[in-house]
Image (cartoon, rainbow, N blue to C red; front, side, top):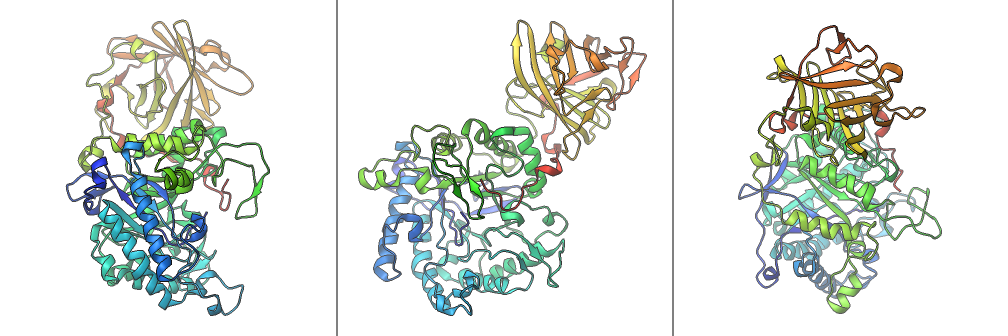
Length: 602
């Protein structure tokens, strides 16, 4: 579902807010976050729903006259109230809208019938649309305490190039939009998303260029600023807004800039079959590296599980299985949980889920005034999850930028771990060029927040060379077993680690005061780490000042380095608490195969 014009409407409501709505605090970009005038970080959440009658079942008619505009305005007045009706469990603060050129099209303007959609734009109709439809709805949203994000009406026509007709068209759209006085007066309560779903952009010479993305987007940013708009701008990436690496070498120049990203199951190397929060983090940071330095708003995302029925063709002509009515197919308990975990880890990502017709039962609300999840009774679809998730976000304590970026976990223990028993129940490993890190996090969590260092190097800060994430599998008596997955510093999944280990993961178990690590390979299950075949088991033992790791393959030799080097003498490693680890230094990247394949929404 690729949309052309987009609003993102965001606000915080209470039951009393409907009686006395208040304009939201203006936003600006500060570091990695959207920040209000009080200095608190703001995360947006909600759904999309655009003023094209196709997306709304023609509820206000299919015309463009003044009476149709009035009915459209009245409809959105109702939606604004429903989306954040806390008394009925809805805590949205975002709505994304698109008109797809409905209000400004004149197909007679196309030189040829097969020409891209944007050639049909009638600029007089477009100016009327901005002033009589867009501006009044945006102003009404602000009166309801809602922020607004607007994107141009016309969709990306496919492969484009710097200086092409579509770029010139967008420059004109933005010059009209950004110079509109009514929109300018909304100030920091209005954000502009400058394009929808670029796929591939070539240089001005028609050849591939590393700077083409920036060369295409920078003139649009400049037009917006020269036209007088001072609010936040959200820039898109390539690959249907899933690839932002070009901005690292060729950054956009603007002091109030964030990024709009699209996320669907099957993208970022994640689907129901392999959903994993740690991998999602790694894959996302590689494809969207700007998440480390700027705020991110996910402006398209949805899912529901498969159900019996005929398959359908998506917009790329690909056959996809039937689901409950969303664009993408996945399950909340698998992909959805991993997606939310990824966003909670970064802390600066806003997200919508679906559109109004899939988030809530719009007809039920219009008829009876009841706000209810659209897929009520289908917990694996996103709508019930969204109601719970948005409420959780709404009730979180507001954080300043300093608090949001603080390196310490909220549950940090301010002491070093002193016994192997503390490690054995919930182990995972983090390794850097000088230190091995064995961590004690929650057994059901994926959390790179502790490390194990050589005792005489405990104060050193070095870049990580490997990351191990722990997933518990089963418990038997006093033994806890799980699996560790290992990544190189760039996040590529390693095929071997620590010399003797083979495969991309290892089995882990603990018993009493000993911790066992063993290779996990598809051809040989290693129960509780007790099988020492291939010499792949390290036995950790508590000693004065920390722990040693003895090789089961060579019982008289000990682990002495992160490359698996052995020593005849014990090397003492020390466990550090969460409070001594800086997550802002966590910088892993995914394997090459995780990059989203263009045109494969599912």
